[in-house]
Length: 212
Image 1 (tube, rainbow, N blue to C red):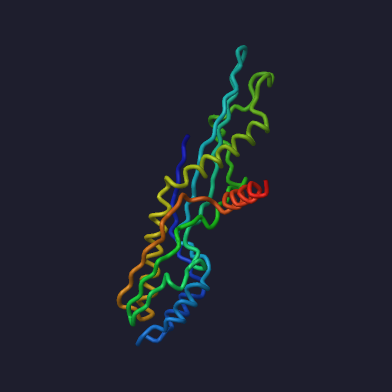
Image 2: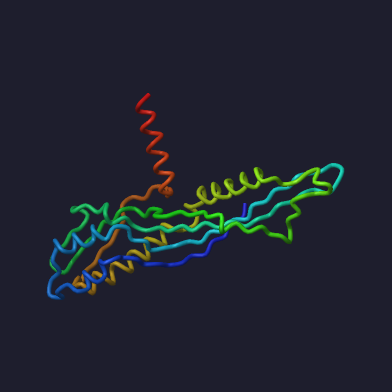
């Protein structure tokens, strides 16, 4: 298995940036800060472009073997869902603020067919007389397996640490501009990362099991 990735740091805070920065520098308003944080919805702080090479070989005892190599690409966006913040997670004492943020989660996972590229140099999909070849069904299975492998290795990409770091830097800067002199940011206990569709399938499976 060969998985490569490149990382793109992103910070998206919707209207919260303008709203909080425009606060009175004398002393932040607790109700306003809590409201703006919770209403900022999903904060995406890191984007990974992950590539994986898939391959197949069809052996032919009487002629040339058939080979297929392709590169696939997935885009993974991770960050914090600020809508999950609870009032007790935000503690404000004058110009001091402590935040206990929700765990990092995958906000978006895309694996578009436009990212599939056959590596022509090493691919020979049809052998002599097409007695053996890499057919469409085999290729589809390979692409699905590539997606599955990427999903299974998400935890090994360092997404959590990077997203936490970017989130802490961003919020510290914004809260400092809004009047806070002491800023403490921590995160709730982290579970294994999963994509939104995986969560949906898990919830559906749990629901169906309860119905039995």
